[in-house]
Length: 127
Image 1 (cartoon, rainbow, N blue to C red):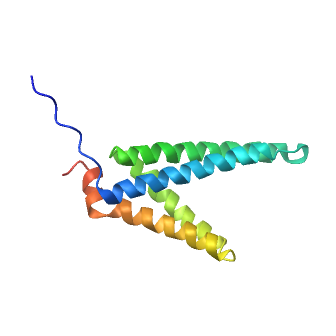
Image 2 (image 1 turned 60 degrees about the vertical axis):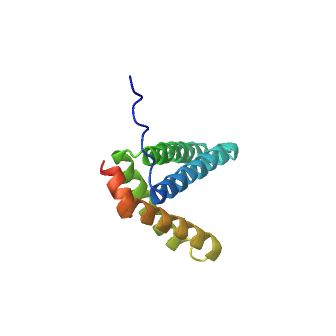
Image 3 (image 1 turned 180 degrees about the vertical axis):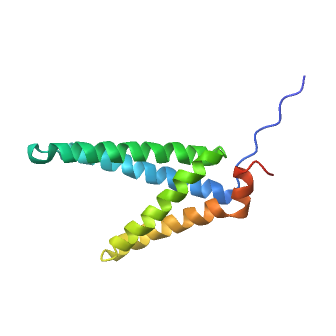
């Protein structure tokens, strides 16, 4: 009995995009923990709801990053929507030039990686 063929790996642009989406997810989880650590009685409800949102969205991005790496078609949507949101965030924080550029560059790299023709072929099941 022969061994099944090994699963093909994601193309490099998709691997880079998956890694950066996972990093974005980790950043949001860290922000959720920081928000919980900074709770005070005056803004408990706002702090908890913000922490839950950041934690949930971060977890979604971690799973989406893993899905992109595994070439799961469903993971493309959350990754693309997030990058559009992060581009808007970069525009909103443009007074802080270094942070705005960093956020925008990461978002553009992920967009380029997910929309690369090799990535599209990998996510659609084509080889």
